[in-house]
Image 1 (cartoon, rainbow, N blue to C red):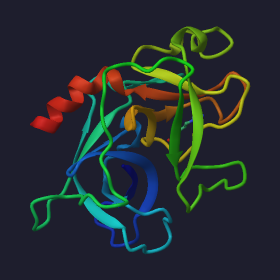
Image 2 (cartoon, helix red, strand yellow):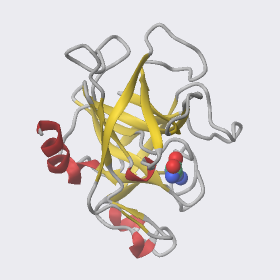
Image 3 (cartoon, rainbow, N blue to C red):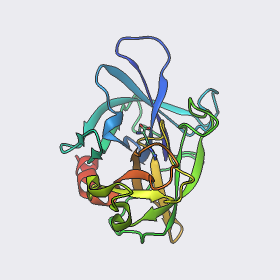
Length: 231
Ligand code: ARG
């Protein structure tokens, strides 16, 4: 379900560049962050691959037909609110868009919350300590769900946090998502099923003490998402 969202300037015939992550929900639908959507660009998604630079046999590359940004998405200097968007993929001359395979699966949705302290997984091609331009290889990191109460502490993010988002990571510092991971999945497992619980959204720096990653709270958007999936 991990997707690489790639763009190039509208009308260009040059290469597409990775700019965000995304999450495959259905054959023709990808979930991502609203702040990943730009105007004046062409978008495509790459699925099934691990290495961004190599052609791999399980790669699927599909153009984006349209982007739907949440109507209450708001960007302020301190936070991104309702940072969620859906991408409808282009059906070429087949009855589907992405084809399910060993390496391409859809992620599940749930509005049943997971407890804080649960260990979940975030993944992407974003920046690491050693690779400032992002990694070519998809990597993942464990993160713990952090309660709203703890993350709203004045020395963490205080009152800029609202219920459209939640924190995950480590207050002492450590594994975190970073630039280039935005739009990608934070998934948690329950009874052998992986659920998308968060969409990588923002953070103050990466991996720093008292500044965990902030994720769009997917559980709060399940109705909004299913409305578009059914439309
Ligand atoms: N906004 C970033 C992006 O566009 C994601 C930042 C996540 N930061 C963090 N500390 N977890 O890729």
